[in-house]
Image (cartoon, rainbow, N blue to C red; front, side):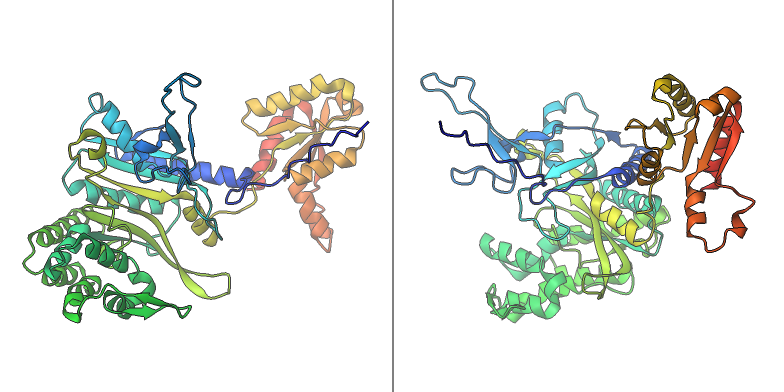
Length: 500
């Protein structure tokens, strides 16, 4: 009889582009989200937790096709309710959300009659993108958004900028280590109008070229707007085919940053010339600068900066980006600025997809993982998290006594656990406490129980003594000592306090 072939064991590994998060990392993220939520709430924004799954039609940016239905998103087709019947309609295509903004547009369109106008909401959670992963680039990551829907005033944009500044400072980025930069799509529209570009394809090509400004600089943009250029690999990139005169307004726009906001605004007015839409954009930037200035945010925190070009193809008005300005070392040991951790802007067309009517909206998204990485670079995160107090088990038949001890500790607000492994080897219990980074171990054998005492072992102090070359300095501070059972909670609290 043929031997039955066993199924291969599954590989114990995360899918490509995903990762697992453990103890301290989860705690750090939770604390950060709590801090950010506190700022958003203080500004009057309400929490919203929308579905992690949307119809692909509602997401809008990506549409399924026959060969690759999940392009850009993780998508699947529902089974038809009439499956098996003649002329059954196919099921809907569903997808994991790729950001928190598209779901907001659907929520507002669906519930607009029950929501206040303007509607101010914040949302936090994971999003998923079916894109090629790379170093530091994952297919699942956390976003933290705040948006105002239904307010056309640029005061809403100015408020987002002020709130973003406050948020960075509250999570631990000191003033001087960040800058919130503000630009406006309408100014760019004015530049395109001055250039006299009527073909949509040509305008789109100019937008894509502008988006490369931070990578290729002024000369690179000029070349790409003209005949083209060689990239770093030596490949030739075809240009848009504009004349130098046509390219001049774009370059003037991108390089119009002046010594202060007033100078920048003056340069932008020159760049847009007689364009009405361009002048409106400059007026809006001027009003934002005035509004944030009235609240005490100077140009060292929030600044008008035309070099903010990422996302200009998506947004309809002001755009903003928070950049961290301190230096870090890259993987090759070279110094570079940390870069952007947040972006946003005004998007007045998104809800229109559902309602047919234009609804003004503006918002910001913070990349939580990027911000956590920045705080680790600043030494504000990444410290080892203290584990629980471990109650050791000296007699397995007295588990109720040990549960009584741990219950008292927990009611006093102390993180604690009873050792639940095999208690036969006490050394293994201490190894477990060490792996858990436990600050204190509590020992109560039958002798201690009879005398009404417990042994407290200060594990942090014990580790320091073990590393010390001389024990003389530790004679007055033994790492293990006996205390009355009635004083156990108070003495554990004292040890924990001394370790901070």
